[in-house]
Image (cartoon, rainbow, N blue to C red):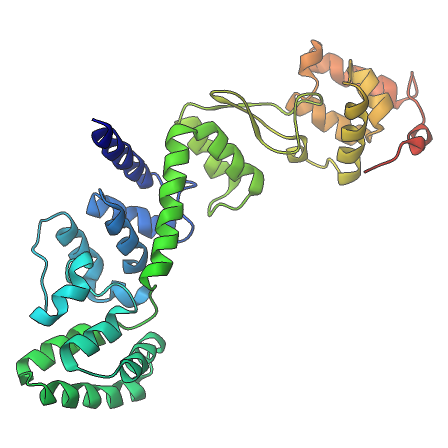
Length: 328
């Protein structure tokens, strides 16, 4: 039963790859599209997909061919029986860069050094070297008894791999990262998307990740002068608190002053905030607009009125009073 639960968990996480936001480290649209086409159900298939979408492996309709074979809708095909050992995991499709020297050694009996020269020439699309290595490939294959038809068929497979791709180790690293992200997003969506938004490392804009969070049923809590931290953080199972640094025109110096003052004691009113944090009037008004003072209980028109009263000198402490504080 435990094994069945683990298998089900893996399937659910892999299905999560179909929703690309935050999931994949590079080429998310291409990778998610091919994941859907393949109805990916195994990690090995995901590893291959990472490389199949690269220019070298994606030539000549290989993505569609790979998708059909991965789902069992088309049989795995091998240009020669000697290639089955190295191409079995990718259903007969040349997907990884190391497939080129492996094919050259298994089928034509070429040395590893010469086979790697051909690989580099194909990756760099160096037609002169490719033409030279074709002769070497044909001669080596003939020496071990391959027929002209077999040689032509396998060379067509090899030469079709033109442009860069990934080696399997590189693809595995990307696929593992994508799977781990899928697991986190499925079981800890709020924490996962809070991390993506905090580090701003995703492929898409912050708006796209915000919309994805809402699609998953998550809500965003307004920045708050007492509750917000230096990052997006989860306040409940389905609520993410927005940090103060997302407020327009709030400077680094103001953020530092707010942090220092709040570390001494929480702000108890908008007036207290204005006196202690010493933010410019424009910054305070932007904080009002986003709801950063709503927890004090006053309406936003009342907050604007209070802020302007303090700014015009009714109870405002001079900024010099803050100079005695030590900024971090």
